[in-house]
Image (cartoon, rainbow, N blue to C red; front, side, top):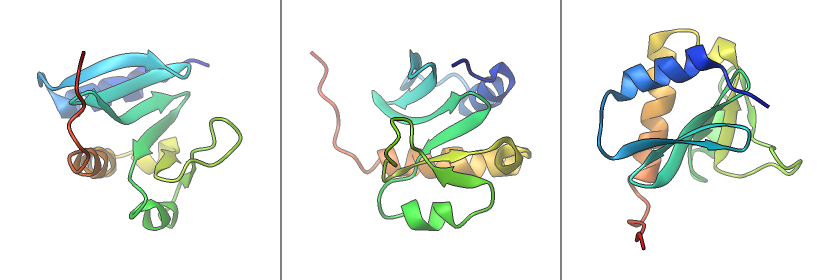
Length: 112
C-alpha cells in the first residue's frame, strides 16, 4: 500500500523542521516519530493517529474515524482518520497535536 503524498506534506508542514521528529516508511505507509516514538502517520489516504488508550473511545466518536485494524485486529490507542476528517488545517492540526500530547506522556526510549 502507498501513502498520500499530499497529506504527508501537510503533516510535515505542521511539524516544521524539528530535530526530535523523524519519518520512516512503515506498514506500507509513512510514520512520523517524535523522540523515536510513532505518533502519527499516513497509510493510503488515511491519517493514522496514536491517541492512547484513554482517548481511544472519544476519538472513535468523532466523525470520519474508525479503529486502526491494520492486522485485522483493532489496535486500542490508534485510529484511522479518513480524508474528510483531515480536510481542514484546523482538524489536521488537532489530530497531530493529540498524538503529540499522548506520546509525550510515554517513557523516553533508550537508543542503543
